[in-house]
Length: 495
Image 1 (cartoon, rainbow, N blue to C red):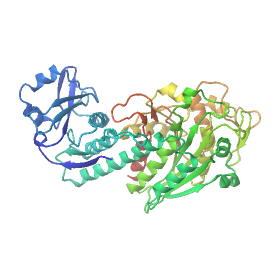
Image 2 (spheres, helix red, strand yellow; image 1 turned 90 degrees about the vertical axis):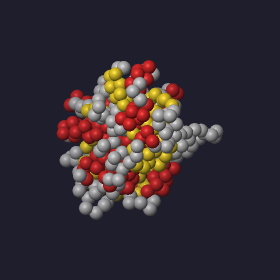
Image 3 (cartoon, rainbow, N blue to C red; image 1 turned 135 degrees about the horizontal axis):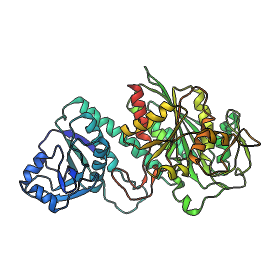
Image 4 (cartoon, one colour; image 1 turned 180 degrees about the horizontal axis):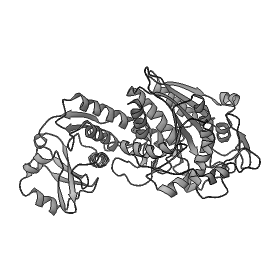
């Protein structure tokens, strides 16, 4: 992670490789945002005309670089768009900072003079510095441009304890997201169910989170038919990992569940080759749950947390589950398997029953679950489904406070009837109709949540992996979707 500090200093006189300044306005009527007044004055009266001549835009995340020259002590000044509002929204601030830091890879030092007049803004800037400076270079043999060496946030709050604490929180959140990105970006030949379980145990070692791993023999004895049914076609056996954080004075008990398919071939319902290329990311939900749990513990939030991640590899062999097979899930319900490429709901179902036994105040599952959710909401928005109307409204709002986009989707009576439509088992795994496939999957999962437990399902199939160009603080590849929302959820429950 980039080293981040606070300093109360004159921006135009700060010696640094690059000075980042925000730009706001509409069209060609742009000006420097709060924090950049001294920089504008240093360049002189002609500076507004210079901005127009350079066609500088205030579009969020747009970057323009100009030489520092004799006007400022920095070698280069980076003008980054923050939108059209003088009162810059936190998410615009994050995206702008992320773009600026990403554009400065290789710079030894960066100073940022931006709207940083509250601890919330300071945290947003620190978080975005960490997220924007991310790069996954583990498998690159040739020397690559290093990320920014150190970053200094210039603010009048530099000596305030709450501002320093805000940097610490923002850094912790960014580290959790980046660790999730690393795990998602790791190819499946280096991250299978067994090695991922070992990695989780290693990450938690010596910390405040206790980890217990159930191996395939233990899963067999306990009757985890869903996880075993998905994982039986692979040479690498499945695992169920339990993480527990129990601080003194906990004000609530949260339960998290994550889907951890380390590679998804589709099983006997084989995916097309092109659809398999990024299927190392099908454990994004599990990675998000793990890293959020560790971050919540690191922040010492007074919330009890119990998390489960189901780890399996959906592969093909003579032992693979077949379409038409019936699985007996943990807890006793039976499921008719009709499409082995809808494996995520099977491993989640076992974990949801297990998590329900802990009787949490709120249960949240996170999964790259359905292509139908991507069709409905696109590649950047998470689908939210729930058994509680209040949560269906409040979770997207909470996610927005964390900087993530989510949107509610219904679970209708019609899809519930389809879930119960099997003629030979308690439940049908998939529907013969393609309509409302994301809601069908959620309705299926709801069958495994105990009565009386508020539950939220987050379908991150769209935003978990960015196959397009980087933008803002979002890199190409794994994004760390849902981590910030889970941390925000715990934070607000603690408050």
